[in-house]
Image (cartoon, rainbow, N blue to C red):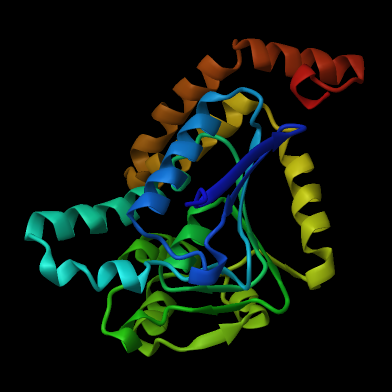
Length: 259
């Protein structure tokens, strides 16, 4: 059996490609674990500066594998819960990845596949891509998409998409904030690569801090944010990366991490 994912690192760009094209890159237990393992390796590898998540074949991802889920009625409740948690862990692992991440969406992203896409910091889509929170029409709940969906489009539109269950094109996905940029299919690779190169210009420690701080600050009462943020500012200013970044600016050169 071939591996369900392919991973590589080149020039600081780590790629994680779902390789279940015949199954529309849907998630089963083995694929979910393989994605989590790959994300963990990339997180620990200083050579990986940016993660690009994509898929092979006609789809980005169709979410959960129905052939796998159809086996669940014969399982114990604890085993079904473990299966659901395995899918949730994939999205959480990508969302918690301490470095910038980009979803490269060339084809269909539906159901839980939207959740995978929205777990990334950026989503760049081909103009031919299709999207949908279609689980309601299959009698299912696209739970792994809900947190990212609310964050991306807001409560009202998230509820509408989940209840309606229809599909829509890339232009509509961009209009409602589901994706960040739409490009011609033959320009997708170049657009993703250009964005990844831009993201490599950021200081890794700042990018990791931002990814944790934004959610933390959002959850805090307004009057308690300043003290917490000022502490982080004071601590960051004396780090090696901060000193290098300021010196590089004054010397009119790139900092070491951007070379």
